Image 1 (cartoon, rainbow, N blue to C red):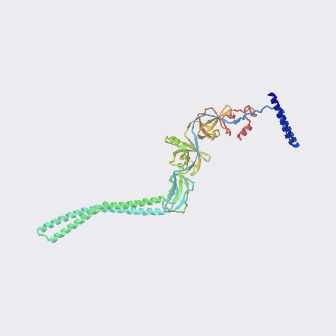
Image 2 (cartoon, rainbow, N blue to C red):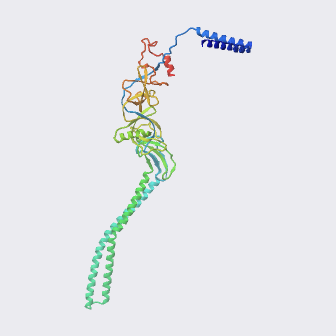
Image 3 (cartoon, rainbow, N blue to C red):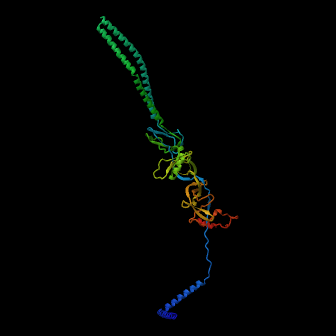
Length: 462
């Protein structure tokens, strides 16, 4: 078998040589030269790679991110809610003319503060004074008629007594004449005359009785006429008083629309008056805060707010919530009363205010930069970050005027270092350098061991 295998190899080698010789013979001289040059280049490159000096692999150091931190100290704190409201007032009087007259004098200017009862505008009062004189004359006439009627009543009663006596006498005379007629002492015509006189006296007596009885009706009529005259006089006096336009309450003049010499009709608007002691601010409050505010209002607990007007802090108090949602708004208007009169509060002005919400239990106040995606913060543990899911319960402005977010999470504890630097690639496990833990060398120059150079801090901040 070995001999046969060797013979087979020899036959194959000879066949390959013959094939290779045939292939080479078919390749031109230029092609053979190019192939030799290419093979020489490959061999040289391989020799250079093999004989090149070998270096140790470069070790890339992990990047350390400089960050700032704050120490957590959870406690019970009241969130603040930033709102924008418009100044309004439930007491803005639009003073109008109650009678037709000319304007005699305007004693105030637009924007002028006035006290209650101050004379603002004087209308022409000559017509009103003439009406008073006429009404007084009518009242005097009515008084005279009542007095005359009562005097006549006294006389009628006296006359009634006389008529009664005369009627008795006439009856007696008639009775005597009837007796004499029966005895044939007088004629029938004389008896008839006596009876006629008696009947006439009876009629006069009845008329006098009616006159006395009608006194109460006549008196009521005259008294009604007198009352009508009194009403006319009172109306004339009221019209006279209406010629003087006075301030119904203390406040500021607004919208003066007349001048001396103008003719005004009944209902013509003269000016406006704003009660500066009843100023209020209406601001829309988000629906998620309404339930807590209603509960505090029902319990009688104070809900305070601070408004900033011309860099001046003005104290406000939430007095009530609106009964309905205004068109185009998602929240309910809160009505804030101004604690004291302030000239900076101008009707219709938009002001910013900060509302103090009910306290939240065990929350931490942190800068807004510490919160990522409104749901996550990072705690520095050693030199690494650890992400913690949190609940944002509100916001507030601290005493230094800095905006802070109130967060709460069972994964946070007092004393932990919370990262307050916004990193674009913040993840759990990222290596950081807590700048709050570094110290400045005594000479104020150089960098301590483990401290990141300021140039790198600037690059990260950028």
